[in-house]
Length: 271
Image (tube, rainbow, N blue to C red; front, side):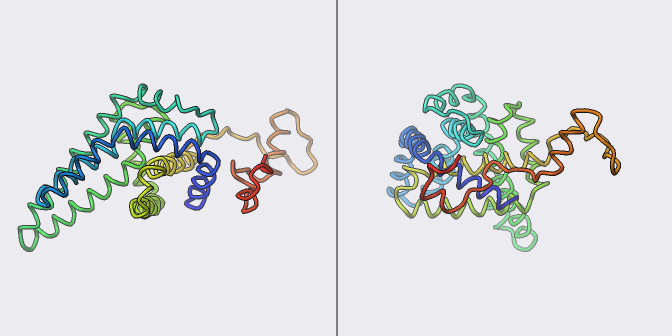
């Protein structure tokens, strides 16, 4: 499944590259004030860098426009029409829920860092508690990859959104760890490139999160009960038995099956 998530992320990003760049430009310029203030605070006095970590970065990344980005890339994953006006529609549809998810993640992040700083001053058992607080913070960070995607795909109340995202995290722990590490590496490479935050960083992270939820949720979809298998030589007596037999004779088809390197250089050949 991890391979399928990464391949889906690659092909969906490749098929919608222009829209991703345009949406990321919108996201960047909507958040440029927060990025600029954080940059100024960081360079005026290093001792105030904690405010950059706690406020400027979360407000720039976990913002209303980020929820809009997840909604916009969700349409791409579902192969629906995605004119840029859908980005602004996402801001309108999930404005308050996006703000509350943002504030909850910021509050938890601040709480985790305060606990780490407090426990680290205590020798012995305090170091164990600091370590536990650190890993709790990592779990919340991994959960955030799912929370925004679940919100835009299912539009659940906030309590159910957080509950479902944590359950999916626990039930798919190793897949989530792989996705989280990949997103961290992608985030660092984007920052080092200089143009990543402007052109593709957040749009691609949102695309990755939506692909993860899209593929993981297929495990939990209720499938219709098939008709009893036909005995050898027995003929089907209903259209459902005929269709079940045809499905059994065919391998399940994934939405990006039969795509390879040639589709990168000759995308017009792909149907």
